[in-house]
Length: 362
Image (tube, rainbow, N blue to C red):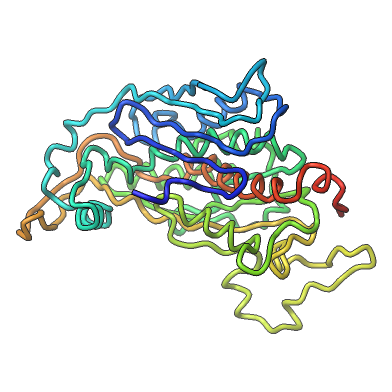
């Protein structure tokens, strides 16, 4: 299986399956001398791990990372950083009933047709548990580009949405982490949580949207023509399990207005009066805030009986078993931020530290 490496200069390669012994990865290209805050790395993992509230899967995993190489005296040495996270609470028997059955909207059918074999235990390599490794790498990338702030929050669940722009919200860590859905609007958050509980009680699932905001980013990040900043961010987001859409700046709403309404007019200092471009023009950051939205579908595993087929082409009835998320959004927040950080860390390596720090900021 190819496609397990992300990045060009700051690269992460991940390994492991949902119900295997462990997951892990190797980060290659991280510069020497970066002093790491291990509490922050574990904090990011804790935001992603299962069992953290009643509206996520109750699988009980500590998700404690063990570093194997590339770090000495709490600093990176410039050599590959190896890490591993052991699985503690995998219950493979929950999946015995689908050994020969293809779950609707899962990777079961495509994996088996492509490779001739599949790990049916929790989806194996296709499980979102793989993203644990991305969060470790992303937490280190955040510390590499610490001048830049990356903030994500849940902006909609189903048809319940925050009707405010990100500028009108308190996007502090305390505000976002105050509730289990990670929505900075407390009134809307309460409605979202109630909706998820309602859907969960029916044995169903629900999707929504995460908004991500990048602040204090220098002008000049992005490599046209085939490595435009928004293109790399889009690729990173679309590689996350359950993601069905990505838009930045005005996105699809920008198609409903004219060019004269959409253009971001300059001010004398080079900033713009509006920011419908989403902080990126010509594939290059312009110094304004970068903001984008990611659409997550409802999780495919539901606790309702559905008609499907088995590997022999026979119609069968199946129902999900075990522990699953009724809504992926709250646990996807650190994944979105980590993939964003990995993209920016890769560009950081292109520009080198001295050049990156000297680029004029607005």
